[in-house]
Length: 305
Image (tube, rainbow, N blue to C red; front, side, top):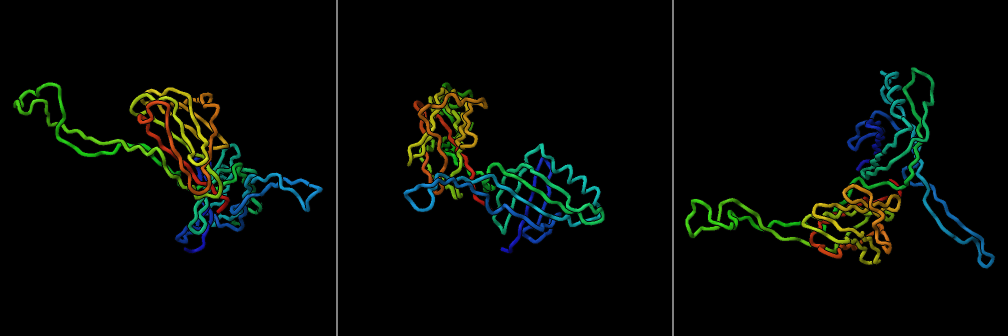
């Protein structure tokens, strides 16, 4: 695939397009310089130790991502109109999203506007812009949100009858209790253990959606089978109730029917992220686990694009 960079900034229902598409189609802005897509700055904490050479590494972390873009509007026929559109777009009150497709690898990331300017004040020149973005979470996201249904209903067969408690009017005695209204039978598929693949560069959060589809459920639980880490919620779900657990370390949440229920977490719980590579995950409940539908969602994270 040809080398290209297709970049989109989205904010408050508007968008600006940069670079060129995979088919070579030029976007509205030509990119003259861009930095920060490939990596973020690092912070390594060290200390001296008189007994060893060099330093001791006490800790390390990835800092916010800083992205700098310099670009030029290709069409200069409506400079003043375009100038006002650009000013309106770069509103620091709103969070934006950057999507980058570099040679076929596509990632996105949320950003805050740190600053921007028109480098040239010459009205007759093509409009050029210089933009600085900061991304509080430094990781690029996969474009897909992966999902897995751990428990589902599988259709088995259809029959043109169903059993009734009394004779249907107009049917002969040999057919007592039968009617020609169709019904479908099936069976429950209970995959209490599933394998999830995180092909990202770092651990990512997991969203678990428990739905008490067939009746009451007591104290649902999700477990990382290898480490034994788990999240258990102390609650009695009625038929139709929905429990959603998000294990992301940046914004862990527990909600029942859309209402915050984090206080119901079992205090022995150890919320877990999905490690890079394979992850065995299982679910259970203190009572009636087979009444649950369980859906898992996650988005792999990357160091850059």
